[in-house]
Length: 344
Image (tube, rainbow, N blue to C red):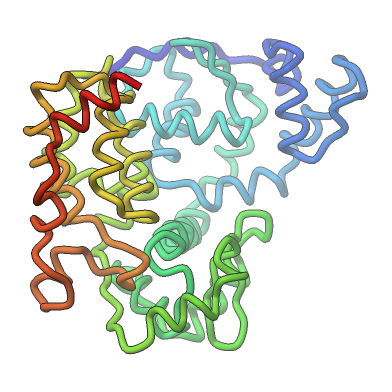
């Protein structure tokens, strides 16, 4: 179901920022490394100068996914009502997080001075660079979750899953140099791509992955992780989405719930506990827990793990590297466990 978004155009960034309350202004200033204690009017003026800065905007525009660009082009056309799909709602979140718009419920305030900069930059050369840098950024998001640390050659293989954008190693290194420094969440050293959050554990991760083949997602999965926060179009994920939709307000809320559960599963992979937590969070009645367990089991079996160097439990079972996943649920009375949790 699409959601109506009503767009109001403000002449300048300062006019948009004036719509924010004091707490929102301070949070926005802090996110942009500005002085958040200089008084409301001064913060608004400082934000206006920063958000209009072409260097800042060029960095933000360079990494926009196609869905983000689509929204910006609708703003260029001065659309006043947008019947937003789920991906467009998430793109709006992305623009909001970068302080390019201000949203309040179904109303979005868009500064024309930012839109005008985008319109001027939206050339064929920009589109060619954006396509490669946004894909590189999407690959970094996936690599951080599934691998933590990758050899340059393996990261190149991940990037080249988008066959239309395939490059050689030296071309990839040149693209890495073009990445905005503030948005690059990887350290590139000694022939390795290392996620910043994994840097302290890089030796441990390399030892864990020793002797394991790297298992790669496809182009669709990488794209969906960047846009939806999880592999939105995979069959097992769609099954879980459909199940959870009965207990959430709308597709946006279901997607938020899905992405959180999926990422926790990628990192921790404790299916019984995760399923119990999900049942409590979504207020799933005890009589539906057995059905949830089957749907969750399918999702877990299709979820890639950092501990498996990108392989899923299903992959590991098929290769004989782990016992049948059903063993995890043997002897576990899920309904009784849920009743105990609900009584806590």
